Length: 554
Image (cartoon, rainbow, N blue to C red; front, top):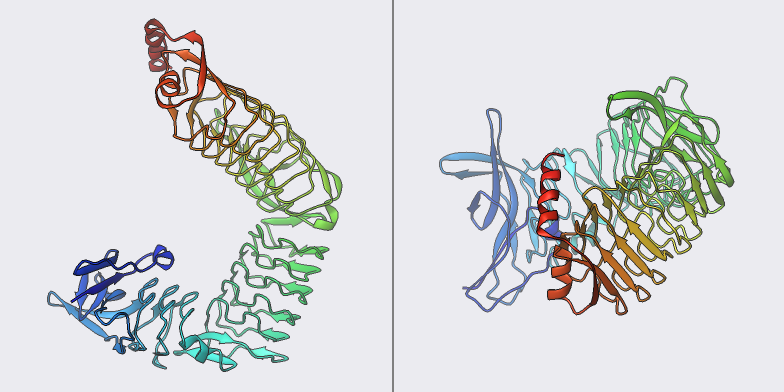
């Protein structure tokens, strides 16, 4: 009998595809499990207080060519090696692409993870007892199942005692029922409600809960709400004003992205807003409770007060500010930052098309996506040391930035900065991230460093690049680091370049390497590639001994 073993423990399983071989046993999804009991696979957990079993997968007879498999009833408890475990959870993707037509859960289930029944083509019914009390109900649990049609055939769906799974009606005002303390992700997605009032039990507004509710104009939070997750009010284009209570601590990325917000009030407990207001082009006013000790505003931007390491050797810390968010309408032309601002936070100037120049004194770091998709042309700072992932990605007007003190450049930090033609790198730089300068206008690259890594695709598709010199201190050149640089004529590789990934220079058809004989780079280019090269020096055995002892004694 041909069987399919499905054990789904991690989110990767959601991206996998069933594959059946011609062998008698076809094993797919061989994830971790503790026990197989009656064709179900369980992870078992026990301590002094609990003995629980989590369903992580199933075994299914596929000898009938993947026809519907009938019904399944999951037990309340299982016994394994003499011990009894209460069945409490359905793990991530546990029944992904199953063939069951109906599944009945026990009343002991309190946790259903993301994608638990996803893409089960025949699953028309999932029976969830009314007395189930949930601590978590995941995202896309029933996506791609016939049961999903039943859910969305009615305005409101509530599972167990406490989960509001979906509301798709058009109420002028929807008051969340008192028994609900858990809202499922995307619960109100694209509903027609105009107003929502929260009860006093809900602590979190989950992922995309009200996304694309384009008629929503009013949200009344209760003091119980502490966190608003990613994309919760994304694309709510009629939502113009919002007031956070004094108990909301943080807002997820894209929380209000592309909404109609014109004003928002942050409560006294709010401390994290990174990326929450991306593409809020109408936002004009941000006010902050006077008791909030973390955030402050000057009417143009929001600042986060924190301590920064100022001197590595002495270990001293100075109080400074991170610029969390700059109101787009104020980010025009040249912006001069306050001298106490030491870091620019994630998404701070994202998409500010009218921004031309930033002048800063003591900026040490620029966080991820800080200027991405903006119109910035010039960035001036005296102490910049770190530029993180995507910081200036797609800034096609950027022509001038000083990186001469920067030790770390993150992935895609300057990707698609097509007007950037000239960069001076720090002589002690340690890392140039994947695609950091991909598709830029650079014409020459000269890099020294301290065990510097040039990551995968760092300078790929730089069509104007003509000369590269990887001087002493550069250690690693990643895969496709200089892929498709058609004008590249010369590449110098120093003696410290000892690790070169395959395809690092693919597409550089006109290049001639300048090499030091006796080095690892010389042996690699000579023996493993067809590139032309010239010998410009000799790395003698005596020099190798000297370098060894220099390294040994620092």
